[in-house]
Image (tube, rainbow, N blue to C red; front, side, top):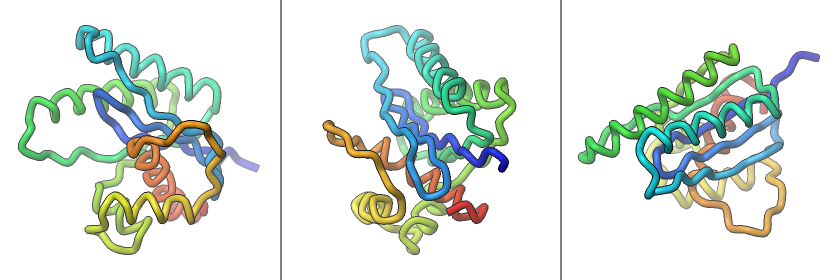
Amino acid sequence: MPNKIVLAIDPGFDRVGVAVLDKNQVLYSHCLETERKSPHPERLLSIGQFVRGVIEKWQPRTLAIESLFFNQNTTNALKVSEARGVILYEASRAGLEVHEYSPQAIKLAVTGYGKADKTAVENMVQKLVEIPETEKKRLDDELDAIAVGITHLASHRGI
């Protein structure tokens, strides 16, 4: 049986949501928080090293990643773009197929409504997949990464 494990990422610079899914089960999820006082290149390095480690451990076949939505804050958008570049580099280096999904497509796939709010997405994520119990509260970036994975699996008939 071929590997259908998906690495799903909600890219960011301060926080990166990461999830590993197989069918309707979350195998792993985490929110990487970069050190705000660290120099910019070191923060990018930590993102790349973390993503590389997840790829090495879980051996996904595919990366599903949220595409960028530009708002008023261009400085933040540039930093997130750089973080996405590091993530895409690591995925390409590992030979993963890369699929990108817009925020609206993710909301539509998960809730059935492309303008759903964060609460609606989070509620549906918890209904659609089995998520391992954790002692800490999951940050929204982590749940968003799971939503990206659900979107990919649903669009490729894996859920």
